[in-house]
Length: 282
Image (cartoon, rainbow, N blue to C red):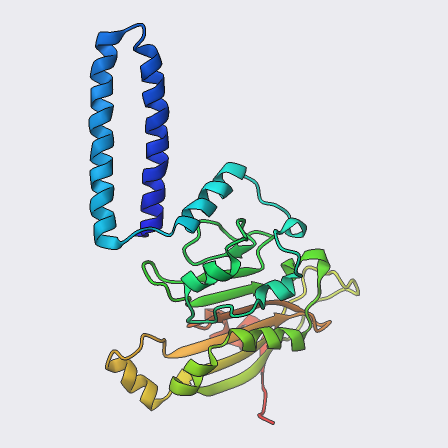
């Protein structure tokens, strides 16, 4: 259970209680006996909530107040602003490459420190209640009660002002989000290949929505040392890391994923209309 969500719930209940209490005080001017009983009940309920909240905080620590502030702001506005209205002036390419940004297996807390001014679903944190939308450029995912980022999705096609990202730029982004120190210590490069669609069934229209992506897959596997360390509980990293860049025939990138698993269809590319082409090391 996320302490921030719990404390946010108590905060909202407290606000509701204050509103009800105010209404009861006004009504008590006319019906004192009945209202006295109701007020006693709500006073007891409020004290119980404070007691439970105090016990929870003692056991789990204080909440992140900036998290609660952002949630309240987002709830109050109830709008998903367009990508051109984002609260900083940088391009989306600069946004996702901000200095000291967390990488794969990085910290969700660190991500909040870097992008906390973004209060809509443009940047989605692993502990966020927002869902993907056409405005999302970065989506980070992780396990419940775990600060570690275990999946990264970057949507180049959603960049503001139709900002295009070519393959080379997408590879720059990929390299910026791969945890080089962890890879060097525990992993070895396992494979590097393209999955190319056999037949796109394309018309001459460049905006044909039926075009299939070409996929550039780069994978890493734990070394014997890394696997032994995992067995001895020295780290919690997965057996594999997969980076996949999806791009169009015009060489502009669609989106990028970095995760612990490979999509099922990619394990049998031939059965799904794709040809696997190995990329040899230079």
